[in-house]
Image 1: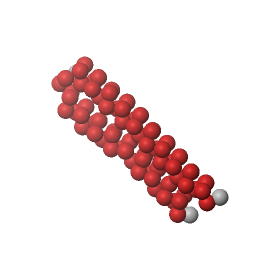
Image 2: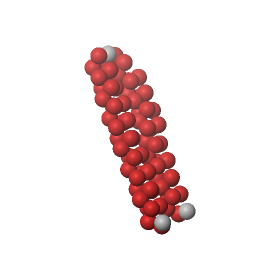
Image 3: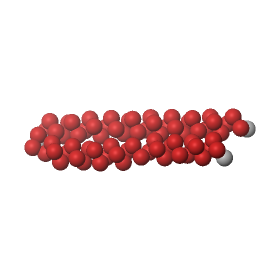
Length: 73
C-alpha cells in the first residue's frame, strides 16, 4: 500500500502541471491575439496576462503540496 501513495503523488503533480501548461498556453495565445487586434491596449493586456499567468501557476504549487501530503502521510 505504501507504493500507491507515490503513484498518487505523481499523478497529482502530473495533472497539475498539464493543466497549468494548457492554461498558460491559452492565456498567452489569447493575449497575443488581442494585442494584434488592438495594439493600443497592449500594455494593459500584458499586465492582465501576467496576473492571469501568476494565478494559473498557483495550481501546480498546490499539486506539489498535495503530493507531499500524500507521500509524507
